[in-house]
Image (cartoon, rainbow, N blue to C red; front, side, top):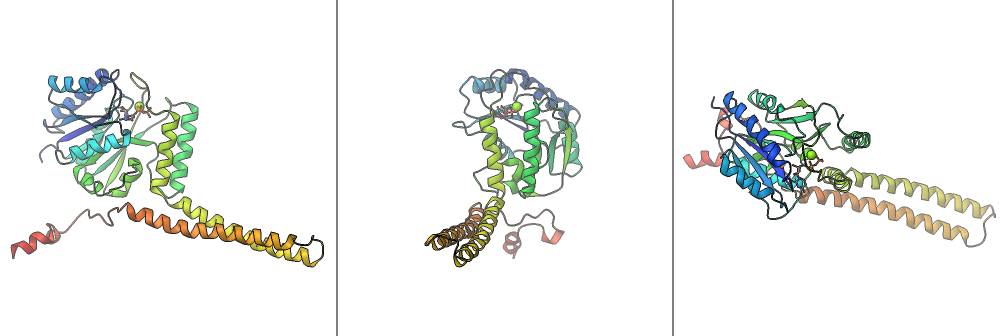
Length: 328
Ligand code: UDP
Ligand code: MG
């Protein structure tokens, strides 16, 4: 079998400090893989400049002049990490057999790539890079991340625990992934929806080699919120449930108000007001829930995700039905 062509997709936003350090590491790893015969020489390191305001792009073009294994694309403006990764993957999809997305700051261990490529050669279409431990994170980040993954899974989203965006995807998986046309991206939650054979590779996460994180708490919370709202309509279900409970309580409230009034312990006018408040409150909560259910359905519809993805076919079913028709 011919060695597969690998594209390493690397999003970069204002990374002039770290790029000169890590670009060498990436190239070294790529060369090692090529020399080991695991990947083809046409493999590339594809930087995606995410609208950086510093010298990032000129560094990328400089690297490209030095060595053709370095390639780059630039987004017209800053669109955020997730969009930058997607742009790189979509650009690479038709030029290669496999992609590996990785951050450019050296936090993710490039040595895990060997195992990832091996897993691909063993038949996996998606290989998740999973952090072995979170020692380098603060206690706060560790605890919140853990709680968040648990919460997400409970919300019905399928995410791989401790996996960020360091992953291998085959071109076949990417072509299916391209059919997910949603604009609110939470890649680590969307990729498992593609299916196919997948596995995990474990690695130790280091400190950033230079520069600063572009994910302050504000952006992290926004990503976390995006993750929940773009993968799950369960929050809406919870509203419906709340509506039902409030409706039930209101019903009990009404009975209580009537009973109090009949026993003569209430001031005139109180029972009717209390009944109205309970009734209107209960109904509103219930109606909101029902409308929410429809909004949830509309939400999933407008995403127009693929309704099925085929992974294998027997010989006769291979090829497109249209091709078969054309032959007649
Ligand atoms: N990044 C990007 N666009 C952004 C923010 C970040 O492309 O708007 C890139 C950044 O250059 C890095 C990766 O996303 O390669 C992860 O960012 P960072 O290391 O700052 O996040 P952290 O690892 O601290 O969560
Ligand atoms: Mg980082």
